[in-house]
Length: 157
Image (tube, rainbow, N blue to C red):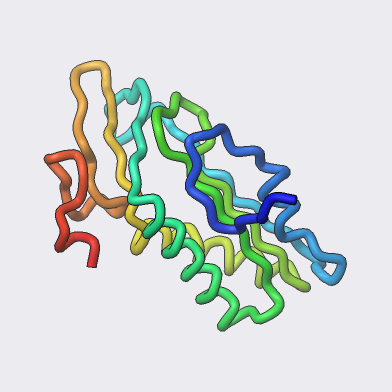
């Protein structure tokens, strides 16, 4: 039987149910699932498609760190996060976060925490392709541009 990875970067289409199944627990009263998709309009520009890239080993390690951080506040939580890289079209699923907890409020809070932390610490970046051009956006908070198409060494501290 293949090892189940709860924190995964993949180039494959994300199967939502597979991510949910990783956290399903008979003692959980809630499973919250966040699904991040590619939108067409960003800051008034029409996106045709995105290309996500990542340092996969470090990105998976940071996703696992987020799971550990959630368990500090919610020890009974189970967390699974899968983020897709590669070329994604409009409405394609970029990330799925599944969190199960005994109570729903904790599942909502932990899921929100996970997506915000992904944007803060996980080395995943994207290139936007618009009708009139393209640009590497840089970090996910869009505070640090990566004009070369990837972060510099000092950006990965």
